[in-house]
Length: 101
Image (cartoon, rainbow, N blue to C red; front, side, top):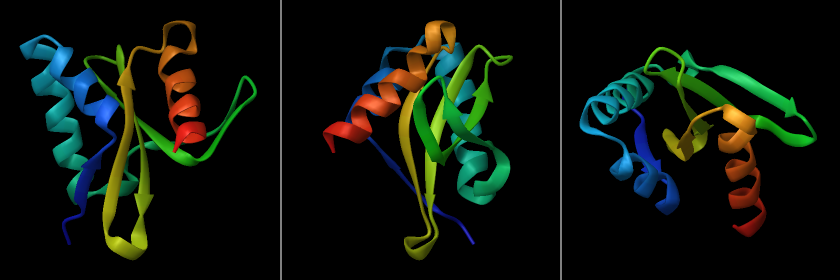
């Protein structure tokens, strides 16, 4: 069964800003997610950011993280953020987006 992939509007913008080589690597990983949603690993609690229902998947030799949530009831994968781990940037963006939605 293939899961539908839904992008948070800001995550879609993050992908659009990536250079073409990295963008292709990220999209390849997202394609894999649509076929095997449990591919990534669980996040849990990261430096006070409760991301326990979310997962991460790496791209570009672990330089880029894709943070997502599996919505089994709807066979949906929701991409929340895409970015680098440096300074917990991608996880902070995720937490902010979750608070604002």
